[in-house]
Every structure is written in structure tokens, then in C-alpha cells.
View 1 (cartoon, one colour):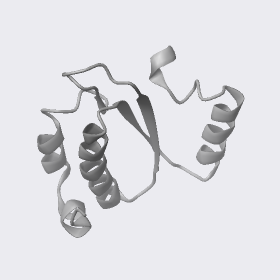
View 2 (view 1 turned 60 degrees about the horizontal axis):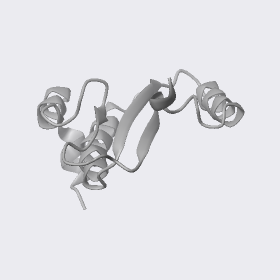
View 3 (view 1 turned 90 degrees about the vertical axis):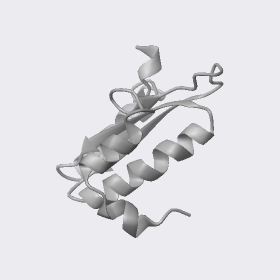
View 4 (view 1 turned 90 degrees about the horizontal axis):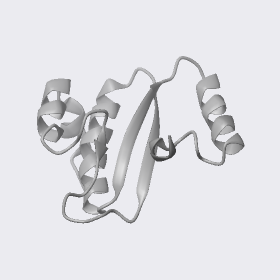
Length: 104
């Protein structure tokens, strides 16, 4: 289990330096040694908790990479609670097509 207090104390520069060699532009990654069987989009609503977001990213990138899946993390700044409702409605109406970048 990662030390979440330590991860939350990291700066954005530390996070970028740690994940930059492995994670592509925009928070995407895919295995180099094989073709991923699964592709995942992670949607993260964010509001005024930068330390939590840094800890989340530092934990999730290695976790998802160990699964050998192709993924992309989307972070949406949440201005009010209506964003979650809009995302949920869009996903339900479009049968998950809005949430994945792979069918564009």
C-alpha cells in the first residue's frame, strides 16, 4: 500500500518527473511489449484538492500499467455538482462512447 501522506506531499513537478518517462501526453499509456486486450478511460472529477489528485495520479499510473492495459486518465475540473450529472447522462445516452477516446 503506498504512503498516501507522502504522495500527497509531492509537488506537481515531482509528479511530472516521476511519470513523464512512462506516461504519454495527456495521461495516456499503452504496453510496448504486447497489444493490450483492454482499453480503459478513467474519468476523474476534480475540485480544489490538488494534494489528493497528485496522490491519485502517482498511485493509479503504476497500478494501471501493471495491469498491461491501454488507458487514458481524464481530469475534469468540477465547478459545481452538475458536471457529474452531465457526464453520467452523456455516458448513459451514448453507451459509453463519450468516455472513450478510442472510437473517435
